[in-house]
Amino acid sequence: MDRAPDISDTAFITCYFRSLDPELSRDPLASLWVDSAVARLGDKFRHEVIENDPVNIQLRCRYWVEALERFQAAHGEVSLVNLGAGFSMYPFLPCLRETSLSLEVDQSHVVAFKRARLAEFARDGRVPAVRHLAHRALDFEREPFEALLDEELAKLGRDRPTFFLLEGFFYYLSPPVSDRLWGWLRSACTAGDRIGMIHLPQEIRESAAYRRTQRFLQEDCGYDGEAIVYHEREYFSSEGLEVLDQSSHVGLARRYGVSEDHTNDNTFNEHFLLLEAGDGP
Image (cartoon, rainbow, N blue to C red; front, side):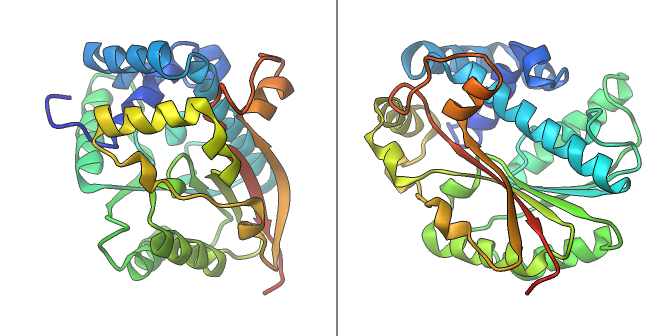
C-alpha cells in the first residue's frame, strides 16, 4: 500500500476483517492479503468509524459462500462471474469445485496486483496452482464494458449456469453506468443463472455510521463519499427474475445469531439480493 489512497483500499480492509474470524467468514485465505499497513487502516476504520463492521464483513462473505454452495449443489458444474472482485478468493474456497470456471473483473491495477500475488501464492503452495480462473481489467466508467463482458462470457462458455456476483461494488458506479450494467446483467442472464447483488437504499443516508464512512472514504481512500449511488429494492424488479432471498447486515446479524444490537444507525447497512433467471423474457 505504498501509493496514493484509492477506493480499492477498501478491498484490503475487507480481507482484513474477514481474516479476523475465518470460521465466521468461512474464508481461511483472506489473511494472505493482509500486511501491517492494511491492518492499521482496518483498525482505524473499526475503532473510529464503525465498530461492528468486521462482523458485518465476515457475515457478508459467509452469505455469498453459502449462496455459491447452494448454486453448486443445484447445478453441479457452474461458472462464477465476479464483477468488482477485489481480493476475494471464492474460486479457491470449498464452495466451488475445482472444475468450476471463474471470471474476475476489476480495475487494471487491482487485477495486475492480484494476478502477481496469486502466482506467488501458488509457487509457495498457499493456493492451488491450477484453477480455471480468468481475469479482466476493466474501467466501467470509461470503457464500453458491455461488448467487453460479452467477449469474456463467450470465452468462458455458456454451457453451464452462471452466478453473477456484485459484492460491495455496484453503489460506487455513477448512475448512468450502474443503469447500463444492470441492463447488461438482465440481458446476459439465461434460465438458471443467478445474480448476487449488494445495494444501498436511500434510508442509509440517515445513518450516523454511514456518514462517518463517507468521511473515511474521502479522507483515507480518496473517494468522494457523496458520489455513492442509492437503489431501492424495486429498481431490481424485472420480469423473468425471481427473488430467492433478500436481507441486510442488520438482518444477517440476527439470522446468524451474532448480534441483536445492529441498527441502521450504527451499521453500514448494505442490502443483499439474490435473484434467479427463469425462462421468461
